[in-house]
Image (cartoon, rainbow, N blue to C red; front, top):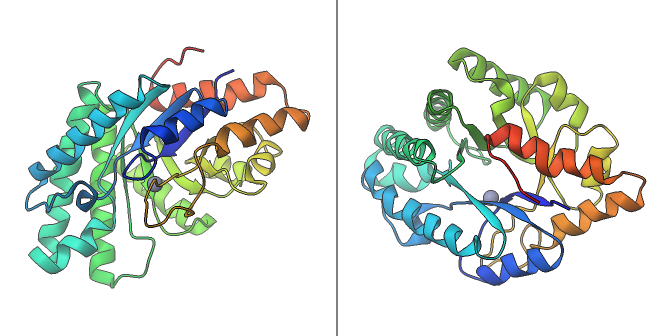
Length: 275
Ligand SMILES: [Zn+2]
């Protein structure tokens, strides 16, 4: 059985042991997402400085690949604007982030990553920073359209209005709505289907079951952060396999799991998953 975690990090805590645990619990495929530049001891002055971030991340993904099938997602975290803005000015910070996203797109074009990650701050920022953040996200959509890849989005908490707003930005750019994957989504599968953007449901509590009861147009994630300073934050690496297998006990069959963990992933990212 194929079981895919759509959004996980390996960083400084369990590292590859987290991937081992994922595998032992039944996980087979994982998308590993790069973190903020400072996690790699990089203080970016230009977009090019993100090359070190991306290279380090890809090298970790290669190691994870010896355990399960792992794919790289290269992100420029929306919180970078809050880190870089005070140093270089917010306009310049946004430029650096856009340059870094261009480079992330090149990695996808070369086949070394399967998607990019962008978004906008999940916390309150002033209207100037908000506008710049939206510009950065729009730029990510442009790259995704050009390269033909998906964008994982880190944003403020989901609600219908913001979903619609983001779908509209995708439309303006000409990026297909289903190529926008909302990371950390609630299990509102039907609502996402109406809006068109794609939910990556956070696998905590009864979310996976609740999502499954609404349909099969979703993927699942833990957002496991692998940070020694926040060991209990978000979910552990075994959560997706555990919650997906629970579906079988609730009357969902293996075909249903195949749809979520294989077909949906293949369609979103243009990859082929082998069992
Ligand atoms: Zn994350």
